[in-house]
Image (cartoon, rainbow, N blue to C red; front, side):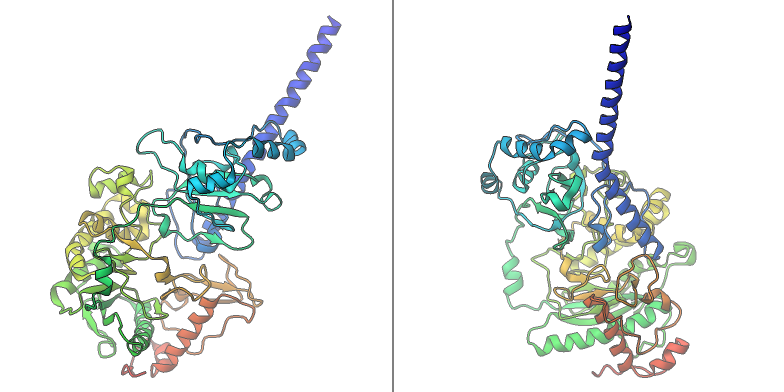
Length: 554
């Protein structure tokens, strides 16, 4: 009995050790996801605290280190998926085993791979992008999908099997193949899905240990595209910005100055697609800029119609403008007051496909949003909902006929979304953008080509090239040494919200010498140049009243 008791005690002791090992392994495997989740939460709070926006009703996703550069979130969509055909996985045991035998396990995985890297690259036609990390909805989690190479990860994405026809297919993969830099993420192969891979900017840089790829999408129909771009016809677009209130008053003056300057450069270089300009003022009354900026005055909705959400006046103003203005151009470029032109922009439209900048937070096909989207579209599958472009009205380039067709629907749909408590809560301040995107879909305006290079958004974007427009919607905060401090007021900062009531002064202080963001530095230079050129800015900055007007001469 004593021997049995001792044996039982030893068995229980071994069981406790094994249990602890399993717990340790669980913690180890989970650490990667938790670490990325913490990063996403930190980024979310930094953006929300800066007063830019707050996203509601989502679960933050793992694999989020890439959000720091672009301000983009990851979201989690749980669901069982089948194991990819011919994929290779590590058989994990305990954390101690993994630590002591990790090198051997990795070697065995490589030896057991059924297809060589070269074969995978040739057969799968993998487009491998080193030092690149894409966000996306996970269809297979990396810690549970250890593979020997980026090529095998690409193959696993291509061969991913769907449980049902409407499951998310894999069209994006990321792989961590640098053992030293990846740590616990080493050999993780994340299989992901993006509704619009061409509308997402990945995080890139030598410090990124991840390798990524996007599976090639079906080729777009280019039947009339060459003719549309090379027939020598008039492809000029009319530029329209919308405005109401003190902040957009001074922003419109800055915008118009840079529009005029860049258009002059464009026309001086030869064929130019930039056409006329309209400030669409939806305050209901003329203001003191009528003789400086070409302006159409639209009647706003009654206060009870928008209840303080004045953005609802925008689609209504466009309907009025289309009905009451004479527009000679065949195309319309919808822009905003807080856009600064960087260089002449060609007409990006191909055939009848509009061109627009994609916004990552417009997600009508997401699982939690699809039932809301269907309130305004009728029944849709997820794949059908993914045909709704992730855009707002600006910046967007479309034909005048397309805008005339969809504008009334945009106005009515935006009102319907605003008055629907569930949609209003879920989509918040961007509900009118959802109204625009959904209305394009409902009226058959599209497909819509997405152009990331159309617009830069500092401080998340840093380089001037290849962008055409600078959007200064985010706060820019830096230490005096030039270190970026997202979500925290910097010793040097510029935020348009600091000038919500009155215009900024002339000669804004330059960013610190050590600040390396080209776009932020250009923004300050552009503001200073415009305010120096527009007469009477000192008085205007002090009073908010434009008593001296710019005559448009450069």
